[in-house]
Image (cartoon, rainbow, N blue to C red; front, side):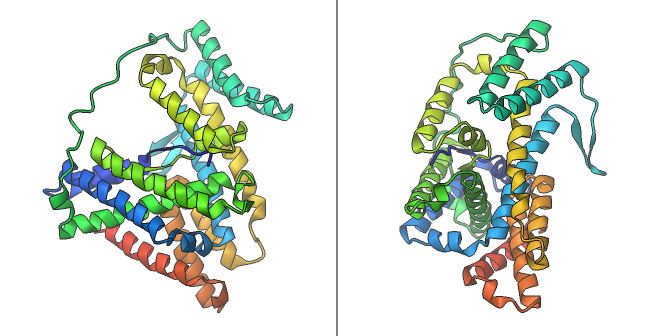
Length: 361
């Protein structure tokens, strides 16, 4: 697949939340839970249970996940520019962005859309380079140097504590990591690949299994190196839009990230007004799938809209998917459309119900 894995920002929140709220459960124990989660992902593939997951998710819910992800991506772009800011009393409100970076942000959006209209390959990369150069000239961005050594990983390397991870409390935390990680990975991967013809290929399921196994292995390694578990990033959509269709895309991404470790100062030179426009553009592309919603059927529409609303507001694909799954099952049962409910989906609905109740404890 043309998708790269990296530590999940959503799981980072779970990681910190666990450390902050569970007395006596330190970050070393949380790393042990991450390591165990990686093993569970791998076992899922070994016993071929992943196939049931793919078949269990209705098309309308997948569409909801894609659109929700698109809105989340666009929201991140607007937040990065301080055009929209978070406010506890009202979720979000208009911010007070600086006028020059905002103008460059709008110019970046215009460049991408114009180049895309004329079918120029690499429109996103061209926009980032042009806006960065203009920002340097106008003094919006500063040159921070080029090369530096990456920090040492010694403080967190093999620092996990498996004994406390396998306690009663630890098992609950492993389940939370597993559910959030599984549906973050599955939802984002399916949503991102929906923009290609890959899901129609005869070898899609075996390739999905390999991708899930890769996620399991990397999550296991995250526990060893000192990080939260990995997932597929929605930003992979930018590579797919640029033409990425094979695993070579992921390999190139990995090599570039490895190189970036030594060029961290150079990446700081790229201003937010150059990186935010691609997020708006990708959000637009993913939100276009709204026309595929089965609007005449409210039992499809309501769960789909729940997913679309909750993913950006909760900044979690897993939370949005869970709400949609539960709503879908309830509405189909009420309207006696039980044939449209996959038994595996019911299991996920129960798991998500327990998961949501657990987050309130």
